[in-house]
Image 1 (tube, rainbow, N blue to C red):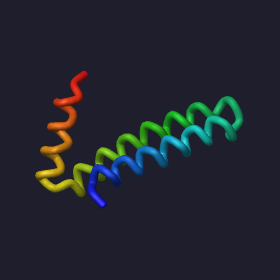
Image 2: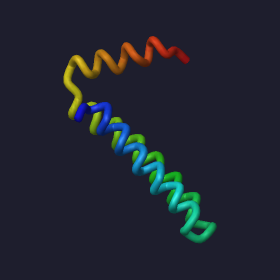
Image 3: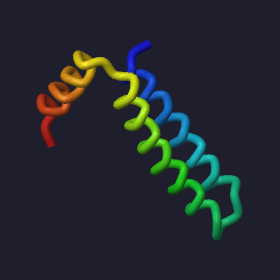
Amino acid sequence: MGAQTIRFLIQVCFALAGMLAVVFVPPPFGPTVGLFLLVFGLWLGRRMFKRLATLQETKDDLRQRVDEGP
């Protein structure tokens, strides 16, 4: 399993957990916890990718981002 796959899985799991928190946690705290989980998942996924990715995977990821454009 590549670093990009691991990053994707981490981010999806935290995004789903954030959506569940918004639905099931009472209103004043639900959106706050959901947003925190979403941002933390994005940060953790990026951090893990940097730590696990080989040089070639990093180059491929950057090349893919440039090809897709803004």
